[in-house]
Image (cartoon, rainbow, N blue to C red; front, top):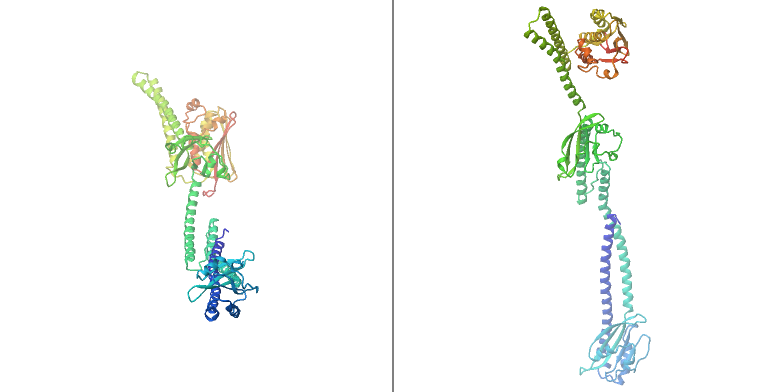
Length: 599
């Protein structure tokens, strides 16, 4: 019986049943006592009336009065269910007259020999006591009241007794009928009680059930349901308060959902990987970037992720030692460098719940740092050689007397090395300008064929000195989105490199074409080519394929780096292709445009 409604009904039922049992028991008891007393009093009154009205009892109970006493006894309207005996004085204790149910004649018999009469009660009667006792026949179960009334003479002595056996079966039948009436009435009352208690309980439990149903819906995530307030009593007030609580809860959850959505958006859009683990090393949260770092599928449930602290780079964590939970460390995975910042999170009682770790990708920064160091080393190395040469020749001129021709040769070397240093510095300034975009370049539509032909004409004399031939192959009306000066600089740089690194008598091909809404310009030579391992770094600053030869040819190692920066600033690309043995092709890719620079 789990429903409170049926508990209410049971309580009402037991309460009414208890009241009915108590009331019926009290009524039956009192009715039994009252009817029994009335019955006994009635017999007693009749006996007293007989004693006071019949003259046969006024004198001695002699033999001549026996017949009159018998007649008087029969004339009295004693109940047909009662037995009445008149006993003589204590000296003889014989039955003078009797009136019995079974019409048996006990006249003249010794009273103590009659089984139906109680000896003890008779003796009490001869002691001048009016007394009655209740006796139940063990065989028949009939309950009777035995009454003895002494007959007092003028000398206040007991001269005889009235002994009445009063049958109480009539009282018992009356009590039984009364019990039946009470039982029927009680049964009706109980049925009415059940019906009324069901109605009352429904009125109480209905709103409670409504509150329960709404709470169940809220548990499932539906906060739109509300309790119907039908009254202004305690139940109605409870329903109203529940609705208010539901409104507040819905508003708070909406705010929390909004904040959670904001946090999730921030969390998942972070460039850093973020994870949260509990004290058992199990994942509590992980964003998409962290899944990418550790090659965890996006659709893998978080509870199924199983990665050790060592794999996460958090091997130093020890939850038993709080000093290890806060800090940073470097971590390398899949050739990428990460800086891990980790800190514990706590509950309101300051108990550590776990650790949050942020993975910052430092690969680019480390690479830039390495490039900076290499750049500084290269600049130092590139400047050291001409400075050393200048200083050596200058010291020689200052310390020793040399002839005019030697001095002139020394000064030529100093001038050449100075030009070389100036060239390096100029290229560095160009790179700085490109890196920091200190000059705004406006891209326009330029005729790439014209720019290419201009570059070829400028370098034709240099090529002729090495007995080299430059061939030009151009498409029709090719316009590219570019800066005219930078595009010319890049093309001249490529042709210059082809002339430098191609043996005498070599061939250079310059070709332009339009393909897939892009403009391509390529410079090819039939020189020794560039090895694949060198092609990866060919556009790095100060990188040379053959350092000694490049330096001897006057190169700074910055030309291709400048070309790459310029092409990127023009939204273009530069690439190299070579098998490492037979020639090299550099290709420039521009966006196609018209004469007005419209793409």
